[in-house]
Length: 99
Image (tube, rainbow, N blue to C red; front, side):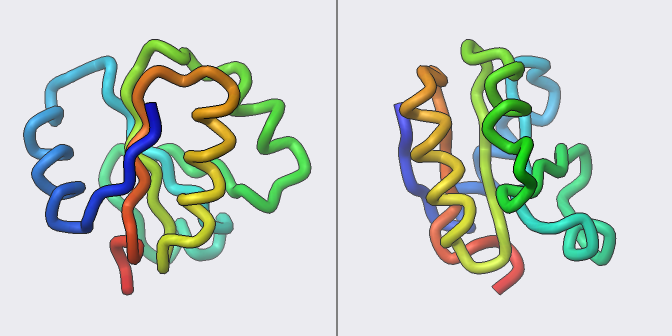
């Protein structure tokens, strides 16, 4: 399941799942962007890294993922790919969290 949500809905989802070990936040921006600011506990997986598809294939498809970027484009692409690869719950933040 792949669903687009607003930044407000993303913040609510993060708060609701702050102690849920089956919830992961994935930042698909570059390392430089990630290093400048990111959400606490986020995993940085740069969508432009040539190994991106191989790396996400190793993630637990049963967990819930919140995928974000700066403006919403990269995370939408990443979430669609994760959906095609069989991930059960993937949320993509429309408009990004840092716009």
